[in-house]
Amino acid sequence: MAGGRGGRALSSDPVAEGLLRDLAPQVVGILTRRSGDFTAAEDAVQEALVAAHTTWPRDGIPDHPRAWLVTTATRRLVDEQRSAAARRRREREWAANQPGGAEVAQHDDSLTVLLMCCHPVLPSASAVALTLRAVGGLTTAEIATAHLVPESTMAQRISRAKRTLRESGATFELPATHELGERVRRALAVVYLLYNEGYAASSGARLTRTDRSAEAIRLGRLVHRVLPDDPEATSLLALMLLLDARRPARVTASGDLVTLAEQDRSLWDQAMVAEGTALLHSTIGAGGRAGEYQVQAAIAAVHDRSPTAADTDWPQVLALYGLLEEVAPSPFVTLARAVALAEAEGPDAAGPVLDGLDAVLGDHQRLHAVRGHVAQLRGDPAEARRHYLAAAARATNLAEQRHLTRLAAGLSGLSDL
Image (tube, rainbow, N blue to C red):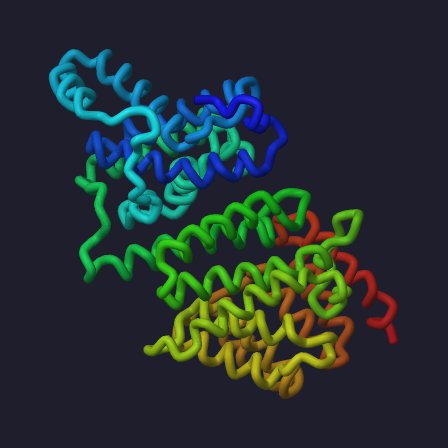
């Protein structure tokens, strides 16, 4: 089945790596549908992926890579079933009816696999880990490295997630129509959670984790491919592209954070801006109330189409944040609206909004950082410095901590005037 002279080596081949990741959820879906056992199918596919990493660099990519993975994973699954005496009869009956070679059904179960991984019975952390393995095609070791935990810890987390799914009685099928919307929203939330951790890492020395944001965008494309008419799936992909377009300008060569106002916008990826904008425009007039990701993408688009920070249409940004508060209210949305309010109407206008967040956010880093920014706009360097230092003391990401400390240091001399 190998590709012979036409076969590409897998090692250092991003096309082949992308192929494996695209095929992983499809193969999990095929085996789960045939066997009725998501846990066993997912384990078997993981072993098949490991086998591909071992044999494809030597033999080349097979002519029918999905069929190769299905056949290899099926053998692993049958071997595992043989080891359980209670399952021998079921294994013989099932294996006898399996097609081999390239005769693989073309039905794509990727969405079903994703929705299974994002089942409401799973906590977000487990849903992300299971999604990365079953849908992202990553190994447990790779996921553990990305999350900065030991491989054994991640293996236990994934095992618990699959056990929880099994004990919940979850079946491998698309939810009923009345449940589908909620399950898709859960899946989109997991993808966006993954993207946010890549866009601004919650901890560590680096501001960004490009591997996570890239994987989130890939998963976003997958969801959009299977749900092309879903406005929120389209809008989430648009949002991630519009944000990720700024990545080349967000960090200096030494790893220091560069704020949106200070970024060299000529470095922004205009192809990503154009794609994200086109996707967002395709959702306009889709009917119904604007969704959370649609509004967020619209805010990102306002910034991306502004040639300079001074050209930003802050009144429009403020109006969009007001809409976002109605669609998806949260203290952090209100905090972002306070920033837009300070820019659009002056820093004094933001004061009452920030005061109203004290009881909710208390001593949170982001509230201190915004208070520092607003105080700086108001011309109060001593107050700004105090809040920047408070934010820096609470920051868990070292790049953000350095940035906040530099802001405070730049105000030291001014506070004495």
